[in-house]
Length: 166
Image 1 (tube, rainbow, N blue to C red):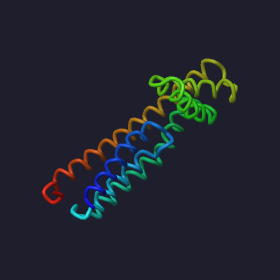
Image 2 (spheres, helix red, strand yellow):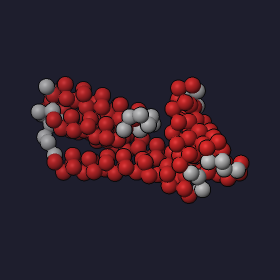
Image 3 (spheres, rainbow, N blue to C red):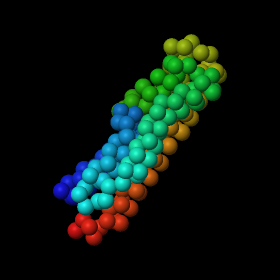
Image 4 (cartoon, rainbow, N blue to C red):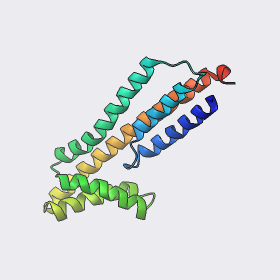
Protein backbone atom coordinates (compact mmCIF):
# COMPACT_ATOMS: atom_id res chain seq x y z
CA UNK A 1 0.00 0.00 0.00
CA UNK A 2 2.91 2.35 0.74
CA UNK A 3 4.30 1.99 -2.76
CA UNK A 4 0.90 2.85 -4.27
CA UNK A 5 0.50 6.05 -2.23
CA UNK A 6 4.11 7.11 -2.76
CA UNK A 7 3.90 6.45 -6.50
CA UNK A 8 0.62 8.33 -6.85
CA UNK A 9 1.97 11.14 -4.70
CA UNK A 10 5.08 11.40 -6.85
CA UNK A 11 2.98 11.51 -10.03
CA UNK A 12 0.92 14.33 -8.51
CA UNK A 13 4.15 16.15 -7.63
CA UNK A 14 5.35 15.95 -11.24
CA UNK A 15 1.96 17.00 -12.63
CA UNK A 16 2.01 19.92 -10.18
CA UNK A 17 5.40 21.06 -11.46
CA UNK A 18 4.09 20.95 -15.04
CA UNK A 19 0.97 22.78 -13.85
CA UNK A 20 3.08 25.55 -12.38
CA UNK A 21 3.99 26.47 -15.96
CA UNK A 22 0.80 25.50 -17.81
CA UNK A 23 -2.23 27.49 -16.67
CA UNK A 24 -4.63 24.61 -17.36
CA UNK A 25 -3.46 22.66 -14.31
CA UNK A 26 -3.50 24.24 -10.81
CA UNK A 27 0.12 23.29 -10.09
CA UNK A 28 0.54 24.16 -6.44
CA UNK A 29 -2.69 22.51 -5.21
CA UNK A 30 -1.94 19.40 -7.29
CA UNK A 31 1.53 19.18 -5.73
CA UNK A 32 -0.05 19.56 -2.31
CA UNK A 33 -2.32 16.58 -3.07
CA UNK A 34 0.91 14.68 -3.79
CA UNK A 35 2.12 15.53 -0.28
CA UNK A 36 -1.23 14.47 1.16
CA UNK A 37 -1.03 11.13 -0.67
CA UNK A 38 2.45 10.59 0.74
CA UNK A 39 1.14 11.13 4.26
CA UNK A 40 -1.68 8.67 3.62
CA UNK A 41 0.89 5.91 3.11
CA UNK A 42 0.49 3.66 6.18
CA UNK A 43 4.22 3.63 7.06
CA UNK A 44 4.66 7.42 6.93
CA UNK A 45 3.80 9.10 10.26
CA UNK A 46 0.98 11.58 9.58
CA UNK A 47 1.60 15.22 10.52
CA UNK A 48 -1.43 17.50 10.70
CA UNK A 49 0.64 20.68 11.17
CA UNK A 50 2.69 19.88 8.06
CA UNK A 51 -0.40 19.17 5.94
CA UNK A 52 -2.22 22.28 7.21
CA UNK A 53 0.75 24.62 6.71
CA UNK A 54 1.56 23.33 3.22
CA UNK A 55 -2.16 23.41 2.37
CA UNK A 56 -2.42 27.06 3.42
CA UNK A 57 0.68 27.84 1.34
CA UNK A 58 -0.82 26.03 -1.67
CA UNK A 59 -4.10 27.95 -1.39
CA UNK A 60 -2.27 31.26 -0.92
CA UNK A 61 -0.08 30.69 -3.99
CA UNK A 62 -3.13 29.59 -5.99
CA UNK A 63 -4.96 32.83 -5.14
CA UNK A 64 -1.85 34.93 -5.80
CA UNK A 65 -1.54 33.29 -9.21
CA UNK A 66 -4.63 35.23 -10.24
CA UNK A 67 -3.69 38.47 -8.50
CA UNK A 68 -0.02 38.88 -9.51
CA UNK A 69 -0.55 39.09 -13.30
CA UNK A 70 -3.44 41.51 -12.76
CA UNK A 71 -1.26 43.66 -10.50
CA UNK A 72 1.51 43.65 -13.12
CA UNK A 73 -0.94 44.64 -15.82
CA UNK A 74 -2.48 47.44 -13.75
CA UNK A 75 0.89 48.74 -12.57
CA UNK A 76 1.96 49.24 -16.18
CA UNK A 77 -1.37 50.72 -17.29
CA UNK A 78 -2.88 47.60 -18.85
CA UNK A 79 -6.46 46.46 -19.08
CA UNK A 80 -8.40 43.22 -18.67
CA UNK A 81 -7.96 42.72 -22.42
CA UNK A 82 -4.19 42.66 -21.89
CA UNK A 83 -4.49 40.18 -19.03
CA UNK A 84 -6.77 37.91 -21.06
CA UNK A 85 -4.45 38.26 -24.03
CA UNK A 86 -1.57 37.05 -21.86
CA UNK A 87 -3.42 33.85 -20.99
CA UNK A 88 -4.66 33.19 -24.51
CA UNK A 89 -1.21 33.98 -25.92
CA UNK A 90 0.29 31.41 -23.56
CA UNK A 91 -2.04 28.68 -24.81
CA UNK A 92 -1.47 29.55 -28.46
CA UNK A 93 2.27 29.89 -27.94
CA UNK A 94 2.58 26.52 -26.22
CA UNK A 95 0.56 24.76 -28.91
CA UNK A 96 1.99 26.35 -32.04
CA UNK A 97 5.48 27.54 -31.06
CA UNK A 98 6.99 25.23 -28.44
CA UNK A 99 9.19 25.79 -26.45
CA UNK A 100 9.65 29.52 -27.08
CA UNK A 101 5.92 30.14 -27.32
CA UNK A 102 5.68 29.94 -23.55
CA UNK A 103 7.57 33.26 -23.39
CA UNK A 104 6.63 34.93 -26.67
CA UNK A 105 2.93 33.98 -26.59
CA UNK A 106 1.96 35.80 -23.38
CA UNK A 107 3.72 38.99 -24.41
CA UNK A 108 2.22 39.03 -27.92
CA UNK A 109 -1.19 38.07 -26.54
CA UNK A 110 -1.12 40.97 -24.08
CA UNK A 111 0.05 43.36 -26.79
CA UNK A 112 -2.67 42.27 -29.20
CA UNK A 113 -5.28 42.39 -26.43
CA UNK A 114 -4.33 45.99 -25.71
CA UNK A 115 -4.10 47.07 -29.34
CA UNK A 116 -7.16 45.28 -30.75
CA UNK A 117 -9.66 45.09 -27.92
CA UNK A 118 -8.76 47.98 -25.64
CA UNK A 119 -7.72 50.27 -28.51
CA UNK A 120 -4.62 51.33 -26.61
CA UNK A 121 -2.04 53.36 -28.54
CA UNK A 122 1.26 51.72 -29.57
CA UNK A 123 3.72 52.79 -26.83
CA UNK A 124 1.15 52.46 -24.03
CA UNK A 125 0.05 49.07 -25.38
CA UNK A 126 3.67 47.92 -25.40
CA UNK A 127 4.14 49.11 -21.81
CA UNK A 128 0.93 47.37 -20.68
CA UNK A 129 1.91 44.18 -22.48
CA UNK A 130 5.28 44.27 -20.76
CA UNK A 131 3.58 44.67 -17.36
CA UNK A 132 1.22 41.80 -18.04
CA UNK A 133 4.11 39.64 -19.20
CA UNK A 134 6.19 40.49 -16.11
CA UNK A 135 3.23 39.61 -13.86
CA UNK A 136 2.88 36.29 -15.68
CA UNK A 137 6.61 35.54 -15.27
CA UNK A 138 6.58 36.45 -11.57
CA UNK A 139 3.52 34.30 -10.92
CA UNK A 140 4.97 31.36 -12.85
CA UNK A 141 8.28 31.64 -11.00
CA UNK A 142 6.56 31.64 -7.60
CA UNK A 143 4.42 28.60 -8.53
CA UNK A 144 7.41 26.72 -9.92
CA UNK A 145 9.52 27.48 -6.86
CA UNK A 146 6.71 26.37 -4.52
CA UNK A 147 6.11 23.09 -6.37
CA UNK A 148 9.86 22.36 -6.38
CA UNK A 149 10.01 23.00 -2.63
CA UNK A 150 7.03 20.64 -2.19
CA UNK A 151 8.89 18.03 -4.27
CA UNK A 152 11.96 18.48 -2.07
CA UNK A 153 9.84 17.98 1.04
CA UNK A 154 8.28 14.88 -0.54
CA UNK A 155 11.66 13.34 -1.33
CA UNK A 156 13.05 14.29 2.09
CA UNK A 157 10.11 12.62 3.84
CA UNK A 158 10.48 9.43 1.75
CA UNK A 159 14.22 9.25 2.49
CA UNK A 160 13.68 9.98 6.21
CA UNK A 161 11.23 7.06 6.43
CA UNK A 162 13.00 4.66 4.10
CA UNK A 163 13.47 1.96 6.76
CA UNK A 164 9.78 2.01 7.61
CA UNK A 165 8.80 1.58 3.97
CA UNK A 166 10.94 -1.43 3.11
